[in-house]
Length: 318
Image (tube, rainbow, N blue to C red):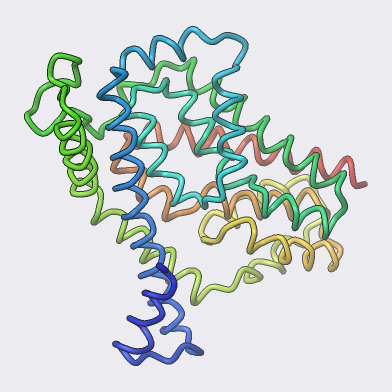
């Protein structure tokens, strides 16, 4: 429905040419912006409604007691089965923070979600074989768990700059939560639109940059720079992928074309994972949620993990 609305607006109302790069870019911008706005409204409303029955500090206490990374593993598996790109994962990440889910567990979700999903798994299996697909899924989930555990241990909660007080300015405390069903619905919708009000502009800006990259910078733009047979190939591939914006499911054929040209599998995968999990639009949106310090730590931790996975797959496929 969102795609149909975007097509109607672009090509029927605005009269843009669907075959032109500009028409494709505007279509992509409208589609992704509307999708993320609706996700924020829906996710925050549902989580806020649940929170009226189960206060956030109870959720935090329960998840904080989970040992051996079980909470991080659960969040990573949830991320793996949800078909979201990096920007579409942000509303759920914000919802986790709003529900006072421990920061490390929330990070496990947002790390794994854009990297692994059922579509990517099937495409990887049909393209590279099911053993590689399974190893890739395990690697992506493991990265989410380990990076989430590391970030959780660093006690960086104070670096979250998006405030989650309710509209009255009171802290989210059980005594302020509505008791009637109608009150709970009103509270949930109020919270969702309040959150959207804080984020709508930076979301639109991030998606606009992503749409421009998607429309005007082809995913194979950096191919010639990846064909380097040295230890620096994987880190360079990771850095080269960050400015590009696309989902993993759209990038699996690109990885195949790269490997067909002789680029090692791990180097190509590092390129794909950096595009999917460390995109520039994602960074712009997250800057509204967290400090530059936490954003740098988050991106740095994930980048190191992607580089290690790249080296691992190069070793396996050698």
